[in-house]
Figure 1: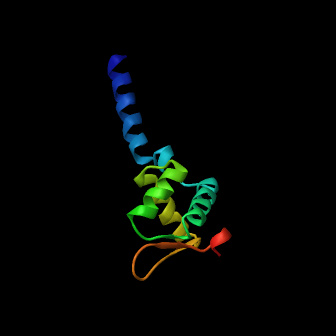
Figure 2: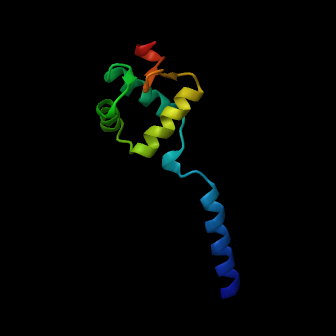
Figure 3: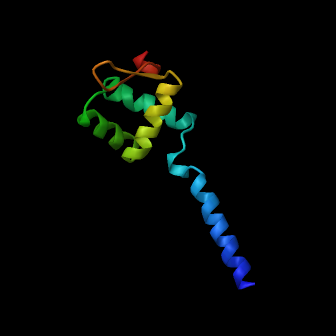
Amino acid sequence: MKKFSAVAVAGAMTLSACLPAPELSVDDFDLARYASAMAQVGCIDFDGITHAEIRKITGWKDMKLDKVQEEAVAQLQAIEQAGGGIRSTVGACA
């Protein structure tokens, strides 16, 4: 029985490693919070200062903010600027 439970635990841990961490998943609520935060900082996240301000507003860590920004760009709610940074294209920034 101990051998089976050890295998089951190892299998569950392996499977859980394949799933995205809940804090790194992005939903519509996250995208709305991001759009609101972007509007508060002037619609453009170009440098470390605005990035830090967005983190402070949302309470997200860098990895979460990066994921939300990637999803916003993928859904055309934000665009990458030629010189770097991201500009929101929704809400008050549209």
